[in-house]
Length: 77
Image (tube, rainbow, N blue to C red; front, side, top):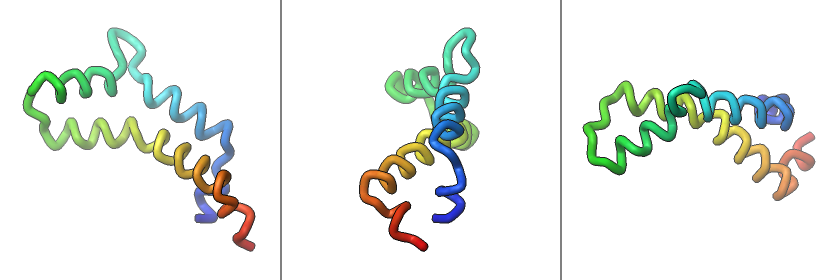
C-alpha cells in the first residue's frame, strides 16, 4: 500500500474529476456507458476496458479515503 500512500489526495481528486468526466463534450464516457448498460445495449470487452479505465482514479480515491478513515495509512511504518 506504499504506492497508494504516495499519491496525494489532491492528485487523486484531480484524476477522478478529469478521467471520470472525460470527454466533456458531447457527454462523459461513464454517463454514456451507464446509459448503454441500462438501455440494454450490448456491452463489448472494449466497453468494459473503457469503463474500468475511467473508474480507476475513483477507486484509488475511495481506497485512500478508506485508509485515512481506518487509520491504515498511519499504522504502517
